[in-house]
Amino acid sequence: MTKRSYKTELGCIACDELGELGAGKPGWLVDNPNLLSAIDTHSLALANRSNILILSWSDPDSDRVKIRPDLSPIHAEHISAIEWLVFYDVRVIVAGTSCGFLFFYSFRGDLIHRQMIYPGQVLKLRVRGVKKDLIQDTSSEEFCVIMPGVIAQFDGSDIQNMLQKWFQEAHAQFWGQKPKSHDLEDFENSYGKLPHQLWNIGKYGTCADAALTGIMPPPLMEYQSSQHYYCAVAVGEDAVISAYRLSEDKGRSLVGAILSKVVPATVSTIASFSKMIWRSEQTSPKKSEQKPQSFARVSPLTCLKDHPRKGEKLTLSPSGTLAAITDSLGRILLLDTQALVVVRLWKGYRDASCLFMEILVNKDTASTSSTNREPVKSDYCLCLAIHAPRKGIIEIWQMRTGPRLRTIRCRKGSKMLQPSYRFGASMSSPYVPLEVFLLNGDSGVISVINRNMDS
Picture: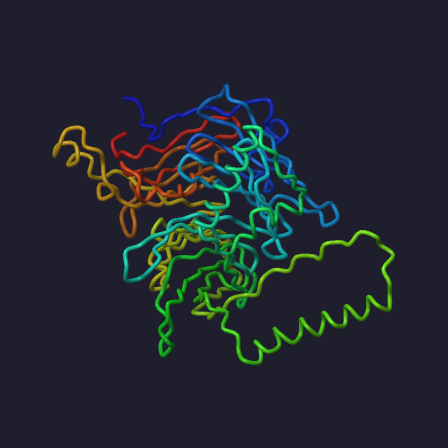
């Protein structure tokens, strides 16, 4: 009787270009903290500190794309995060840098947009679908940038509009129309600065990871308005877990409003007077450095401090109601993000990583009720995949308090990956469940964990 592998091999990424990223040495994929990865349904993006490599794991004969962002050598700027953005059939790769910049690239490696978010290292890029209102059943997509003590949120529709303008211009250039010339700094203004919200969540110390879990009610005794309030959960060194209420309102006081008008005018007057006295010998004016926008209002909700334990990584469920948090003591905490209560705890999982996935549990009932019936969302149950590299296994646990469903052996040098949220996925049919992929760096093989319990 053969052992069940519980995973299906999909393809292989082995190629000569991987040698530039360190391939060829055992453990090159997981031992290098500066090696980043992001997977799509057909492609994989790998990046080191200065280069991005895009390759297809479903079509090994397709061309590989190399991208080298124009980074600042003065500030030792490097790539610190990458993620795919998928709008129906349009795919772009986004790179965040150690200086707080975002670079948007097409699938062919063309620079679409460049924008400064906030001075600091981009830790993670998150994409997910969210509910827009607590009462009405409406949804949208958001793109979040996580930095030490800072969260920036973009509306998916604004990014989609910017991409449509770029692709229209690229299409016009293809048909021989005169292209617009852009230097690197013009990419920040060519399609307008992407509007976003910016919050400071550093009250309990700088965070190592964070996420917006969804909208939440306004605080008690506060004027009811059309403004939205969000809940943010962060993990870090000073506070293992901390939670905040974020507001879209800037919440400036009268004094702050006056200062915001008077101080810039005073500084501008002094600067103009200084230029009259001290003439600059430069003939070409330089563009002033772009300043980040002001922070919106933040109210701390709670925090958990348990020295010497440190929060390391955070994984959010699709609905945002659960978060799996790994810490420095080898524990995994399952947090209810609405009640802000830890509902489950696993011990003995040092260096573990977690991803949520969906397993088909009602397969028999679905197959007998009607022939050729596609599974729907209710046929799946939410599970947590825990990769314990020191044990060489992946465990699948049913949420919230269910049993362990599977134990999957995986080779050393493997890494769990998950495709980012596809914009418009909520309207797709048939239902596409949340899947987990497994990439083995030493062999280059990509597999997917089977969604059926008996396979």
